[in-house]
Structures are given as C-alpha cells and as structure tokens.
Length: 303
Image 1 (tube, rainbow, N blue to C red):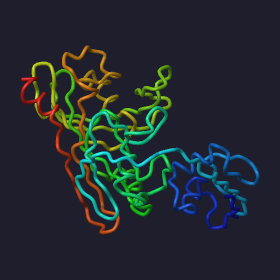
Image 2 (image 1 turned 45 degrees about the vertical axis):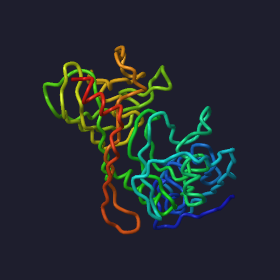
Image 3 (image 1 turned 90 degrees about the vertical axis):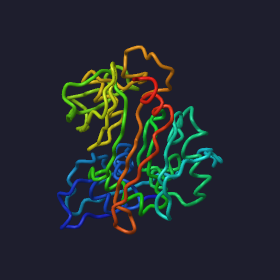
C-alpha cells in the first residue's frame, strides 16, 4: 500500500519519524523507524533518515509492505491470568516460556497461548508474530506482563513505556553481599561488539539505561534485591548487576561463576506492574505471585 503526503508549512522542521507517527496512528514509532531504515519511506524520491527535519512542500511517499503470514497457531496453553478486561490482560509468565514466536520457537510461546485465549481480540500494531505484545521479559524471567487486546490500549501502554511512567518492580537473587543497601545504576546498554547475542555496557553506541536497586535480605554469599526500572533495555537488570559485580544467580550468560544449585536460568521475577488504564484513566497496579523455586531458595537453601 503506497500513499503520498505533502508537508504543510506549519509542520516543517519536525523529525520525519515524528511527522509520520502523527499520520500513521495505527503503527508504532519503532515500526515507522524500521520502514524508514528499510527504504519504504521516500522524501522527494530519496531515501532519508528518521531524524531528517521535514520541510514545507516535501513529498513523502509511504510504501507499507503487505504482511508476510507465518504459520502461528493458537494453542490451548494454560495461562496464569492476574487480571483481564476488554482492553488488557495481565499474565504471570512462567519460566521457560518465550514471549513471542521467533526462529526456532514457533509454538509453545505466550503468543500461541493468548491467541487461543483471546481469539481475535488482540492488538496488531507489532505485526503477526507479536499480536497483543507491547513489551516482553526474557524466556527464563518470570512474572507480570501486559497484553493489549486492541490498538487503542496498545498505543496507550506503549506511550507510557516510552515516557517511563509504568511502574516495573522486579525481585532477584544476586551473587555476593552489599555494603550500601541501595543504589542507582545509570549506564548505557547496547549490543556486545563481539558476542552479538549479548548486551553490555556500551558507552559509545548504547542507549541510556537506569536501574534502581534495594537490598531486601542478605545471606552468606547471596542477596535478595528489588529492582525498579526507569528504562527497559534488553537484559537491563542482568547486565547492570553484572557490571557492579553482583550478577544474578543462575544467569547463564552474564554470571561466570559456577551455579551450585539446579536452576533454569536467572533468578529474576517481574513482581509488580502498574499503569494508567487505557479506558478509565485510573492507575492500576498488580503483583505476580513469586514462583515456588524462588521461594524455596530463600526459605530453605540460601540460609
């Protein structure tokens, strides 16, 4: 689908991606930036960049490609539902569950489960592989996740994520004990320059990332901490805590100490999530029940 737009005088000097975000309200800014990067947006018949400042009378040609359909099937997967209404679904995601389909994981994902549960009532802004998905947590991280059931709720929650106004609190067990019982890590995170599947503190090419941490309980060699996110970078808590020499227990990527316990990935749980409801405008907050393995470690093993 192709459309042509002429920039009005009163909209000049606006970033191209922001200008298009106002035109294409059914698409996220991230998707729009991808269209620009892939050459699907032409300015005066030329490929441009997201940061280009549009000028009066610029001709913007938008070519949105036809969706590529993948064989993603609804599956009757049991879901731990914390809350549900016509706009949102709050899920307590278990360990060993990928949030959305990707190469090697086209079944058994959270998306397969919510497609079965919600039928056609899911937002489609993030495409056919991520219906309803507005944010994610890692495969082996458990806890609260918001699913959006329509595009209005998706845009509302995505906006709050962008503004960093959503409350996101995690609990995790980390290596070592602390002298200072709380702190803030403000360090940019980006792709590792050599290990392309890993993230790292990247001063040159990373994006700003801020994690607040508080020590809740200390054991002989480990500490139970609470983390509150201001930003939501990939692997943020895992990378930040490893950077201050307190990697998460069980983290197979960022903790290079041998784990003495039989665990499946990092001990990290998204415990609390709070946001402004898309329809009511009221603040809502939910807690995801702590998984049994986590409670057992605290109550019977680490002591």
